[in-house]
Image (tube, rainbow, N blue to C red; front, side, top):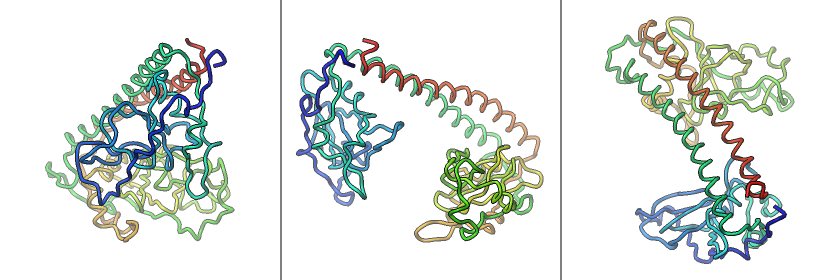
Length: 376
């Protein structure tokens, strides 16, 4: 990076914040023009105040401090921008794509002000610095990074298509689990499984939580049908063993009982503890966990659960509601056929996810090399 001049954004960009106009949701008129905020499109409106090639940088409400989520993004053409994003227009010696790439993961934490809500004010933006190679090099860097991003997006699309394939195969084999067009036998979950709610909060105290112990599974730890644990929110093995009735076993279906209704996952062989915001279903006979998990998380069943949930500010499910939920009961032979299909798809998906992780890691390294002048 030493071979290139280091410049302040205020010297190479026009800051067009004075042109921004915030409009409350109730006052917006629906239209074709994107309405942008700190992290992207918030709405579409019937008018525009900008028309050009711009970079928007979060002022407040941004992903400050994140190494995964960008704080800046590129916009083109007619649009509206509210006062939560700074509007940057590059001058003649700065390529707009290069500008966006150079600040999207910028460490702005030293510039952040505000106690209750982090804010990157305009004075700080003007002081932010970036390397300024020749315009031709800037465009080469932007092109290289664009191609790398395209590979990442292609891999994500492949993974999404596999997820859609699973949903399609499920419907083809079993039909809609709520309307039951194939006429399968219907049973209540309590007829073939036990349902248990997680412990009340009073059973756990601040001193029971440690790092790198037995992970808790609360609704926030169930993402896209998988358990994603937080190593900082765990229990000691002593506490875990003293509350063994809430220990999750392989094959259990752990289900969020509050917040986003229908969020659930099948427990693998790992050691987990059912959190206070969750419940679990332990199948006793005649059912494969992966089939029941997909039934519960289907759009139709989510709607049924939402209608049965209680609560005003936040929906809540109780064990009785889930135990009395009616579920289709396809033959075990068909369930096993679906399980074999899932196994094949998951093997392909695992390879793609490994590839995606590698591409994302390489992209970060590539960005660093580009802006340090190691490639050009």
